[in-house]
Amino acid sequence: MLVGKNSRRVAFYTSFSIVFTLCFMFLKFTKPPHADIVPYSDLIASIQDGSVAKVLVEEGSRRIFYYMKDEVVEDDKFSGEESQQVVDVASRSGQIPVLNKLKKLSTKRASIPEWKYSTRKIDHDEKFLVRLMREKGVTFSSAPQSTLMLMRSALITLIAMWIPLIPLMWLVYRQLSAGNSPARKRRPNSETVGFEDVQGVDSAKVELMEIVSCLQGDINYEKVGAKLPRGVLLFGPPGTGKTLLARAVAGEAGVPFFTVSASEFVEMFVGRGAARIRDLFSTARKFSPSIIFIDELDAVGGKRGRTFNDERDQTLNQASLIIILYSFLATNGRNQCATNRPDALDSALCRPGRFSRKVFVGEPDEEGRRKILAVHLKGVPLEEDVNIICQLIATLTDGLVGADLANIVNESALLAARRGSETVAREDIMEAIERAKFGINYKQQRSSKISKELGKLFPWMPSLMRKSDMREDDIQGPLGYQSLNP
Ligand SMILES: Nc1ncnc2c1ncn2[C@@H]1O[C@H](COP(=O)(O)OP(=O)(O)OP(=O)(O)O)[C@@H](O)[C@H]1O
Image 1: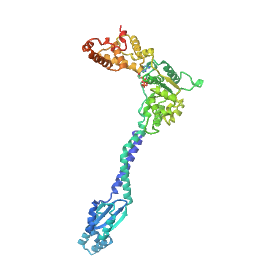
Image 2 (image 1 turned 135 degrees about the vertical axis):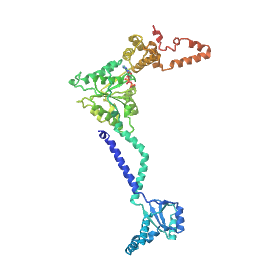
Image 3 (image 1 turned 45 degrees about the vertical axis):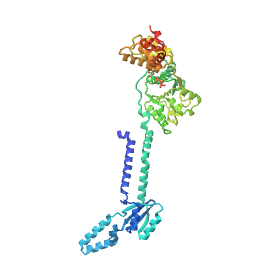
């Protein structure tokens, strides 16, 4: 099972080991006989004093091999057939000591390397070398490299070239590896969210609830010749609850939910992004019916802006996020054309007609904010009535979206905990709203800036300001919440 899963990896490592071993053995067995490398001047000096016996100039390389006369004494006396005849005669005549000596010499001859020394040719000195060898009666010749040696050199060159390429190969392998794809990493999100968790975006909710009804078979859309909406594009400012809506659709329909960021499809290699999309869709199909949610699609759109027309560019610019909801009902083969030929991200995701519905998810109004707050304040112990607090925050948070409101609730609970209180007070909520609107430390920074300015004019002013209640200056209450205090 384990081997089956990793069969490609096992095959890769096995073949790599085999190739590596073969190369190693080849290099070991074709190793040239050892020759002492000496300077060129040594060769010249040896030829001049008449001690060089034979020289070989290798063709296609700069190497020159040679050996000395004193190293071939045995070779001259007891070589080939001649030495064999002497051995035969000695053995026939029973001259055991002579025979032993001959055998020793014969062994010694065999152990002498053919080419004892090697050196490198010097450019433009060949004529001088040849003339000198002729003068001194040195036997010399030239010979091509043996095929084995040529193969050996080629192999060494190849290995030397591949070594710097290994990191690049590894990168390519990782990019091409399907195991690295987002779909494999992802498991369907099991945390369920319902429509009651999403508030303040009623019109978008109605559109999506209809899809859920179709998915659940509550609406017989086929009877009137309608097709199930296969893709919904949600667009709108960040934090308005697009992801939440998508999860609610999956939760209500009771189908697995796959979420992936479009930036994961942006690949270094052409075609890999599309392959990843295919991979994601085939995984989702295994869990069909299921929903795929693609986040941050605008990031991809921005990169390939030239392929979008003006209208769609506008849509993508507005959209901080695009969602595609795909249902893979067992009998529903309609989506395959959309998913099996994603040659490019544009055609796979953004082609006109790809989305059956385009739904704008906008900023919530005051009533919407109140409802969102009611969702998030559920289970938060408050000092005051939850409805009063919801209304209060909703009034003060014009322009903020669901994600901001969720943050405000969490931040106020943290502030209460910091105070050591077990309930969240109005002050904690006000502080959290300020933090959400202006950022942390805004109050202190503005306060100290004004104190400095005043301090320059009236040196006694800052100390007075420190003593006074901070809430009495206009800095402390930029939201004007003091007026709401009972
Ligand atoms: N309409 C809403 N109702 C309830 N909670 C909301 C709503 N909108 C946002 N939230 C809260 O904010 C969080 C983040 O929202 P979500 O990720 O759905 O926004 P988004 O529009 O997808 O943002 P982005 O475009 O930045 O990805 C949610 O998990 C939820 O807690």
